[in-house]
Image 1: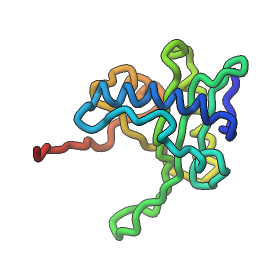
Image 2: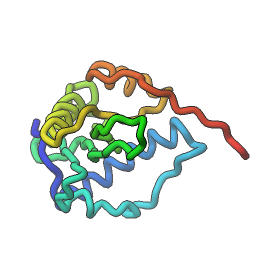
Image 3: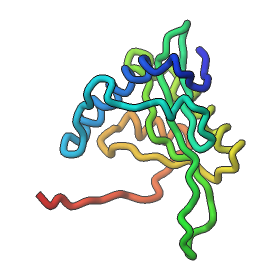
Image 4: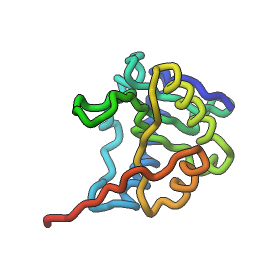
Length: 155
């Protein structure tokens, strides 16, 4: 098992993994998500070495089996907010047949090190409230609930 930074040659495999991620999103919140057309996602910025974002790849014997896409974000310039930086996990997925083998935790370790090296104060992400496996995974990796997002449909 190898955890490494993404390369341009990973784009097809990452695209396939995004399809798995989208299926979960549609399952958990069909009111907000639809499946995108194959090839509709522009991933070029993920492979250009942008200092404010990173994609880590989990690879097993040359096969890409998971990824974690994160970005460094600074707190808004609002007087009551501490001037902190965080690593925001935008997307994370391990292909279904490889789940529950510690691969997600290896990806999480890589992003934690990335955050430390970039001066971040904490890591933040979102998870669907019905995604019990995801909630259990994040809890196991040191995450705790800090705020709850609520919404009211208007249609």
